[in-house]
Image 1 (cartoon, one colour):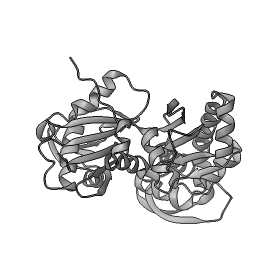
Image 2 (cartoon, helix red, strand yellow):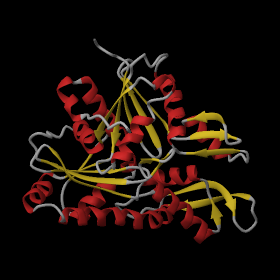
Image 3 (cartoon, rainbow, N blue to C red):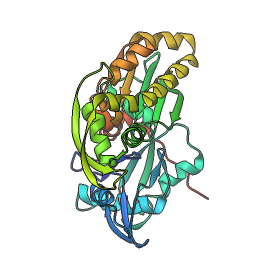
Amino acid sequence: MFNNHVYGIDLGSNMIKIYSQNSNEILKEKNMIAIRNKDTVLAVGDEAYEIYEKNPTNVKVSSPMLNGMIANISHLEIMLQLLLDKTERSVGRHPVIYFAVPVDMTEIEKRAYYSIAQTGRLRKSKVLLVERPIADALALGIPIMRTKGSMIVNIGAATTEISVIADSRVIISKVIPVGGDRLTQDIQNTIRRKLNFSISERTAGRLKLSLANLEKDTKDARKIIGIDCVSGLPRERVITSAAVNEAIVPAVREIITEIRAFLERIPPQIHRVILSEGIYLTGGSTHLPYIDRIVSRQIGCPILLSHYYELCTVYGLKEIITHDALHHWAFTPKKQK
């Protein structure tokens, strides 16, 4: 019997993306939960992030994910149930949930995904896992069963996952702890250190997207409001594109260095195919202007930038959910004995 209470979920460190087959829509919200006095849930998702920006003293706002892995199962259970309520009125009696996961996970880490969908209204869920590079490949249109070598670099908020698909499978994958959050933090730290000026995470994120230019030096600048570190008072300051570029270049170079080192570990015949075909670049942090050009120039091959950005993985889950012929890419985590 057809079950239209089927969901595809990509649990990013910064954003959670949920595809609902019933509504055929994708929900995207901040992966955050706000808790007052350690036991009262105030908000989840975007609403929790708004509270985080106000920094109230008796409320803790955090993400249940850390470096792409589940850090707090109980908080994630609460978040999932409340966010699924936003997708439709009922999750059904026996919902099916597809989770995108990193390739290199222990059995304990896999079981965590099974555990978070076994409480409350989700306790009768069927849980299936899909390797994130496989989901990305399906969204990108990579012919998994035929490719002689396809490389995908997914630059997320907390991590960058580098993977190669050949022989109808992911043959090698690596997750490094560098992503968009690191770039944002580096902008905050550089401005504080050089200008004695403190800005919020949200402001730094906006500067990253509006002023960063990895292609060329520009004279662009933005006037922002922050806190003078000397007086402790709010004030306006002009931040230049040069200051932002100086802050983010080291982390971008680190990612490129990891890509280059990863390529050197690949068998020569697959290496040649990848350099000819190009490297697929996706993930939320590829919104960074001209990142594809700088990677292409440094690595020496074409870069195929996905315009799905942070939604690439969840679109891949949608492909699996809506096409029976692709269901074999999903597998069941082992239950804890």
